[in-house]
Length: 373
Image (cartoon, rainbow, N blue to C red; front, side, top):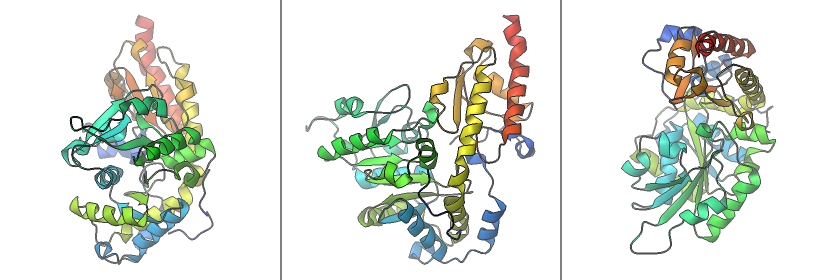
């Protein structure tokens, strides 16, 4: 469910070195939803964008994007940042001090895929716990809280991820997230949401993004994943939080000048793209069900809640990297996420015919090895 007004005027894993630009242009690219290309409407908006100097707060298109995002999420303010990783890092810097611990799920993006910036730059230590579906509860978090002490690092922040990338795109039920926020606040702790794909979670749950995120102290979401914009994320919170975040953005080198060219595409993405995310979810379900029927492949269909499919290939007698390389030769791109785990992500640039191509290619490369066993 999307809470924005669709009638309003528009305003993670890198590509492997072996994948050439030419190959990517004609492939069924299921490596990530970060590979999407801007729509003609986005390109048109970028061409006509009215710009100014955003470091001075004078870019009207950036200002419009920020105010519109704040309006949709029922927040006081928002800040346009170059990437979701920077948005998460800024939030950690604002809420914590050096020596604090940040509680997160073991496979959380802030811990696994942000170059250790939580420690290297923010000066914090991740305090993690693992749960199979990636969805933390207060019962799992509470034992990780540090008691007040002069001998132990203190808990500074709790961070959740919705949807949870490396758990296969699973989503937090609103009630579980709200309980975590309530209990954390009782303990004097802020809670940040890595909502890179929060619009996917919104569509999956049929609840608006403002409702899903209302109790979090700060929220980050990406324009450049399922929403299809070429660049950028938004960080949301109170006026006080965003004022501090703007300073942190400048410190990290994230102050952009005539950024309205990028924000213009982000406005189109924010207004138009959530309405079609259900198509990506349907394609992911179709892909998962097709994969589950192939010999040697195991898919937990219960985890396929949004646009991410992670599946086990250990029974094919080939590693995920080997299968990924074989798929690439057939113009199907997918990422290995473990020795025997492959991830495929559906998005606006892959249609149902593309999914059928991927399934046919996988069947072709896996079947001979199954038969030889």
